[in-house]
Image (cartoon, rainbow over all chains, first blue to last red; front, side, top):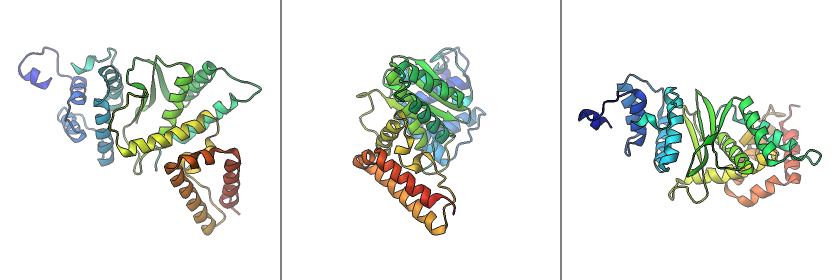
Length: 94
Length: 207
């Protein structure tokens, strides 16, 4: 999605929730890179090594789910990670 | 072993207590009433429950963070299945990994046959353990599981020696319970549960 922004294809603003939605879908993104990405956006995740390992496990399981399940889990993850309640399921991934 | 979710012991103990009340022959409850009672109890204990999710591979999932704990359950499940998912996820909540409490904890409950083919060995081991603990919760007899699963504090003990023996016995029981289905069945027998309770009160109570 970020590359589509770089190409000027998308008009929608690159919000934090869109970035998280994209990051969760990105196949090879590790929890460490995810934390760095959020830090670049000015959002600090107070996660330690054990948290990062557990989140890597979660990402692996998450990416093996069907798209339907991913949408539901992602919506809830947005709340737990960022405190964002999305009214529109799946709308955050842009 | 640490708990996965804050207050998991209280949640599991209360859920088992409610389900035990509902299995009394004098007041047999229908599955619907049991499922509603379980949900109400969980919500009273601060666990957010959502039974309206459209899920495909999952029967439900648990997420817990400083923002709270929530159980999301598929809308396609019947009352009995919903109750089983609640019990299973609460069992997982008791079975955290060794180490500090996690900032974000998650557990997925898969529809049979739709779990990923290659799951890590520790995940599969935890699944077997969660099965046994969930059975104990559903039967309203949490004490049918090793005490260290649902109560980390073993009490003051009669002295240093009896405390060490007690801890050794409980750790041995937990280790066996993790590895052997036969021991899980044996441990859930009322006579064995009563015996372990008696040994625990003998060694665990302060003199």
